[in-house]
Image: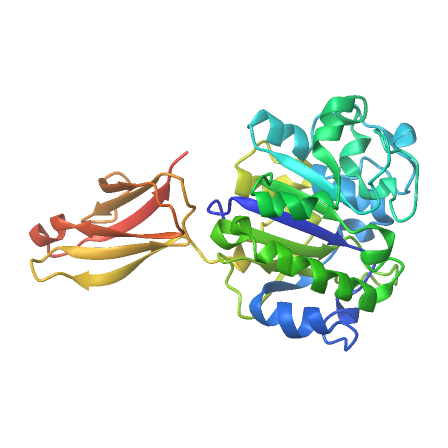
Length: 344
């Protein structure tokens, strides 16, 4: 998954997976997105966590800090820097949080003004974000700006998207959220940031509070995903999503429960080499697939698959998600093994 460059994480609200998959009120999700996506059948919020704020905090910090309400930031502010935004900043990786209902509000937006809710704004609950006005304004933006950022190619690498109380299905139900996704997701998928090496994660923060706890949705769209309606049956939680984000961006240490989680790698194509056969002169041609563009990749060869006996045959910085390699050394050996590694 380290081949993914740009992430869009859209967080919907308060629906069981059974109220989404197969629901005739969700035609866009069921007839357009799911057939081309990879998605989870056993994804749940951790610890039957409710309501919204604890789930958002878990997604960016791997814990809810003991919070189980939607109190405003001044009541629940955390002094720790153990959260995703801080790690991204430390690594020089850009991020933004686009939120419906934020337009016109001053920073910090700590008042609930419909359809905006502070519970959808998890980074605001960390003091290093809450009290830094210029920093907060630069990263926490009205959703309306996403369209121009897509058009102008000035996106951050990590883009968290909160559709607000109505469009998230919180107040509108499945039909309203499906209609909003139908209008907005195509804009993202048409962008160069997505079509090159991007990924859209569409998920729900929690179920509808029923007992026992129900599964919720996690849908992934990406040129690098397995796609084709692939269904993963492994159990996942928000810790899996956080670990996935940390793996994509290469930021450590793992935050909270992400250290113990399994990432969502099963939804994506593995970085791989495909044989294209021998040339007439005996050389061998390979194609590396599902690689990250503009990142250094090393193709290596070995005669015996030992841990140490690997020789670099090609160094590539591809501009697309695949590239070809020619190995003239295959002429001199009857048996040859290959691997591809991504550089720093």
